[in-house]
Image (cartoon, rainbow, N blue to C red; front, side):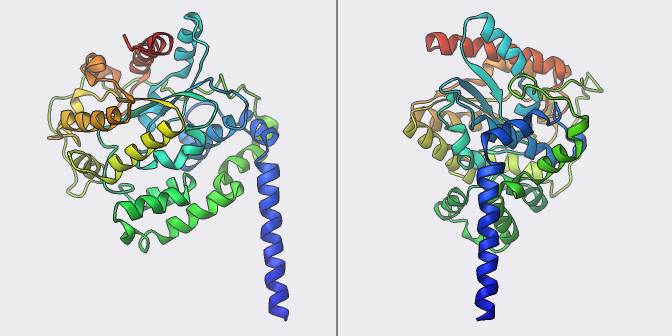
Length: 366
């Protein structure tokens, strides 16, 4: 009898915490207030986990606001987070009479595998157009290049149903045992915002008196403000470790066959079509010198062709790499093989904005 009473008390505590979490921490008032006091920029100095929580918190917060059919969202990895300047795009939209709000929803380390996980946010009624900008390493047959990346970053970006659906349909159920702590952490983060946004909430509580309030819809640029330390790159192969994790992601993505990444992209396109959302998919520009390091020997055209087949088979728009090919030839636009510097980001964001302006107004990219 005593044990039953203890269990009942524990259940009551859990239910009470969930009610507070959902109806208080998850309310529009609390979320918009917290978002106003988060630091501007990428906040890499506070660590990748905080940076990811902050990015995800903004995405979640925007979904609580009534902006029906107004958003143009940019999805992708840290290449997108640091390379797409939403302020430049917003200015070009405004000057050309495009009544849409561009928002950068890039997430650090995000591959195509994760796209369906965020369907509640990316396919929300607020969203008018989805722009997915992929890297040539975005479609592997694995979750991440390291288990600590899963535990430290991706457990907060979780959807239980979509995760197990992906494992079952891709015959990857053997991942359950080795990643059991990742799964348990992900389920906990999905159930409780206080776990998912633990670092964000602590930061705001601790720094509230000394933090300036900002408009999180308009003062949130993540684009790089730094330029590459060495503008001219050496034309020589970079030495790589034998078991380089990122190199493996490139290799697994370079195929005509289905992989977890390609299958998840297709799943997301199906969901978008069911929700009557338009999707534009394009390769994010990668510098030519990337072919001298981890991307060495990778057939980029095969990857692009594979993505194009999937995208067009679902009636969505694919943008060819050659529209931005001239950017890839200019080394000084890039800090490394996947991230742009300030000048590169400014140039790319402007070109992207003008192309999207034409598409939104006239239904064509050019």
